[in-house]
Amino acid sequence: MSSSVVLTSAQINEAGLGDWRQLAGPIRARFLTATFAEALEFAGAVGEAAQWAGLTPEITLTASNVLVTLSSEDERGVTADDLDLARTITDIAAEAGLRAEPASLQQVEFALDTTSSSRVAGFYAALLDAESDEIHTNGGLVDPTGQVNTGLWWQEPRTDSRFPLPETEVPQRWHLDVWVGHDEAQSRIASAVAGGGRLISDAAAPSYWVLEDPDGNRVCICAPMVG
Image 1: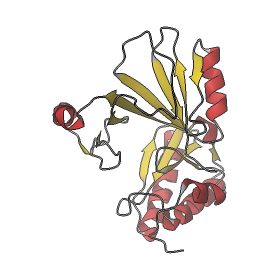
Image 2: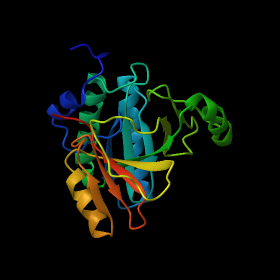
Image 3: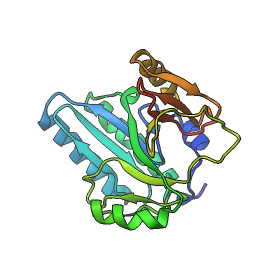
Image 4: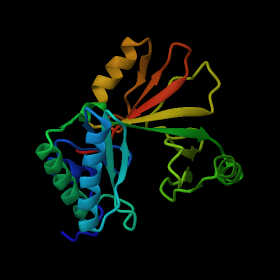
């Protein structure tokens, strides 16, 4: 397979990258560290490996963890090169005695219901000093500086009869999409229900589930389709 071919979620899952999970597009891993010095040393080793591979991962580090996100910008997706680098990073972590925690991985997006994405896009781009992400069908924004960590995108008010939802009692234009690994979705749903929410639709599962908070505000728990 060509290293420039964008892989499907099923192909990524079949690669068996135990430390890594695909969320809303990229693959991501979180490695636990004991000190800032340990995190910095590990991040440096990851950076060296990425340079040799000709790739540019996103690396976020604190004293307690290093978060690595991989995706090929030119191909706008995950390729075989990204999987190879992921394996190398896992080996580097193992040699350093660092443990990954895939169950904690998540990615959050905000979606706005609008009948005209072109009407609102300019406002939010200016408000957040952001750029078009050219990923979502109806358009979305990304902060090139990385300071706005949540994605922002637009969708038309629901008209898809394949996944009907009960009528909502709460007027709502914004909702959260919380992306988790495909093997963590049920656990996250159970935790949200235990926290006072309720599941109102699994018609689109295993792509996403719709929940309500105690006040009736709706959110989606999303996962990549690996089957």
